[in-house]
Length: 224
Image (cartoon, rainbow, N blue to C red):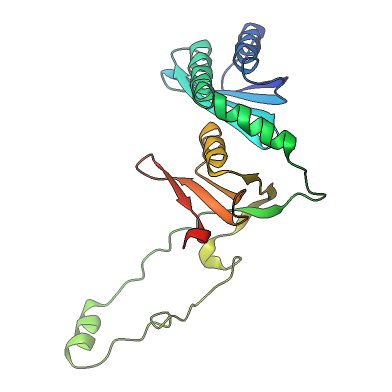
């Protein structure tokens, strides 16, 4: 497995790299024949260290773990323990998932979609309002100025409109054919907020996502 260790304002010496390599090997060899690559990033925030582990473990399967500690070694141990805990939870399902992928005949061209990252629009400062004019207009029977968007007319539209923010990143992403259980597993292992997939049973595009209450939501147009 190819492992990249990087630090943001943190020294990543040889001893730390050996600790990371041994720890990741111990975690992944229990669940995978081979993991392709891993990126381990350390940071420091005042009194504690942070560690983020991103592992690409095979076709479409990514894992992410995060941890904190009083030193870099213990921050890594916590992040690796979080990954190991989720892997134990999905061990049976991962075996079924691997068999499904092995039995599935891959299409000549994988189904992909466009994934973009939009910049957060900057706040527009409020324009000064003459309160006397505003109150006078509302009390003397005059109608307030009409809002061009009040009856459903948009002032600007389209994905590239100013109201959406500028596109700062764009990448293709594969839409995998999965069961709902497999999609939830990938969502959890990769700590992703949302995932679109092709439902293996219905053939419809489905979405699973992490709700604010911690539960997983599922959008299935076939059930509507």
